[in-house]
Length: 436
Image (cartoon, one colour):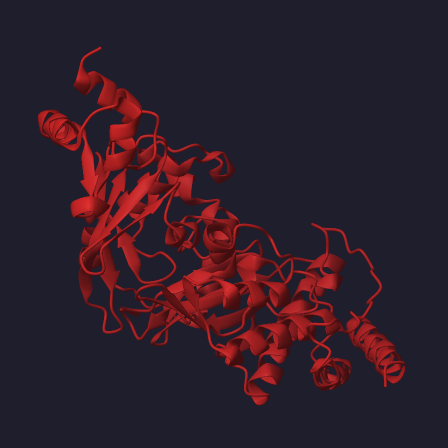
């Protein structure tokens, strides 16, 4: 086998290879390796400089080629070239930034996890863009499908990045339409038939629009029956939880609920958008965990400590404490949906990634959420203090007690749920009393 063929075979096993690794594998000198690399030409990708140079085989994605540009939209709405994303044999990628060098990933970069179509809105993406010929179920998508979707129709993704020239062109050519609340009923009907707005995740029926000068995410509850009524109650509960957190000094998005044409809406302002066209970079705890923590610490509190110990990530102690505070509060108001997709950070890249906790969202007593169209009555069980939250547990518990009291006195909630809230308040009061 010729030297070049042997080199291509080694690189064809996937991943990035340093020059000394290739030399040892093939038993060749550095000058011979350099000659083989020159002979290979564009068949080999080279990243980095001098002794830090790494080599890989490119791979091609149908319709995208071997790489796509990545753009960043700043807070004023102006796009800038951020870098280029190169596709490598074996499924890896290399993000070559315009400034700050490059970075290799065994799969897709972490920001793609949050940008990709997902959740209730994302499920309608294949039907909305049939010309892309993507699998009908987004759960069946692989990495290439996600990249095709983002590079071809990714102009309104979570955060401030765009992948591909086509998505940038669509952003620049698109007219930003503003919707009035009077149109929310038809938007809700469209969402129920699978019409998506943007890639914002989550499973509750929702749509994302620009309305009254703000980008908003709008959840809604419609229909008849006990399950529909419960969701109407829970939308109010979510709004009241955000308002309570706001009073304690926790950053939260502005929210408002209202009824229209028999539908209850909860409108929440998006914190990754600024004005009409400005954007801000965000990353979810889920993406951070997948790409940097390496396992699943299982609670927001434990994750906060792992982030603090991770050299590549930078977070201040105040936000670490706030993560524990919010985890504790969620446990004491019956929020059983504290998964890693429900906490996010503003992210700034330097030598590592600087994280600032983003406003809170999806904070409500999900323990009482229906299962589909069935109302399942569950018992609220307050979570006891742990070694991580012992120092703040009683403070948070008193805020949770006030929250349950407020729900029990909110006339817009159904009588049955107000009684449930009163029982939860009494249960928590006893729980606190037993832990002096």
